[in-house]
Amino acid sequence: REPPACRPTMAARQRASLRLPPEVNRALYVRNLPFKITAEEMYDIFGKFGAIRQIRLGNASDTRGTAFVVYEDIFDAKNAVDHLSGFNVCGRYLVVLYYQQTKMQKRLDTEREQKELADMRQKLGLDSGDRGLDLSSK
Image (cartoon, rainbow, N blue to C red; front, side, top):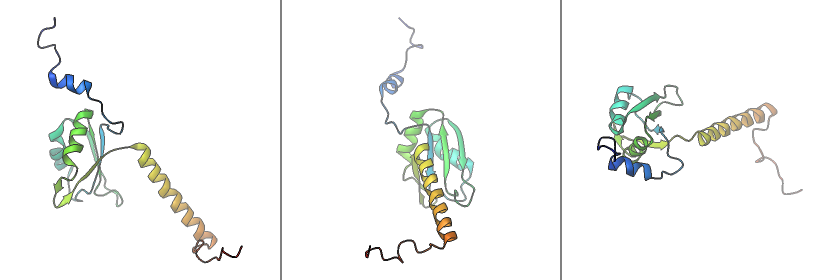
């Protein structure tokens, strides 16, 4: 029989048996942040839920108000999502999601393709698309 210090705690045993949905991971994507929020304030807010490996604040014009928060433990990340989604920071309600690389990449690819299509239409003088054509007569 193991000494008491070596036995897993009740909480650890419950965590081990808990099955998480497939989208749950340690990396979180946070939106609707105040533009003036600092990394220290982010650590204060998100650090309450567990050890943080990294926080990356968006600083480009199209990424301001967003951040990535990476936890050391997946259960801490789940706890943060459960408690901070809708949390009010300086009059703004946070949107906290699990980062899903495939969905993010698809969105970026779609935006890039739409931009390429718009550029090609402009280059070829097809700005109106199909709106100016009468396709019913054919």
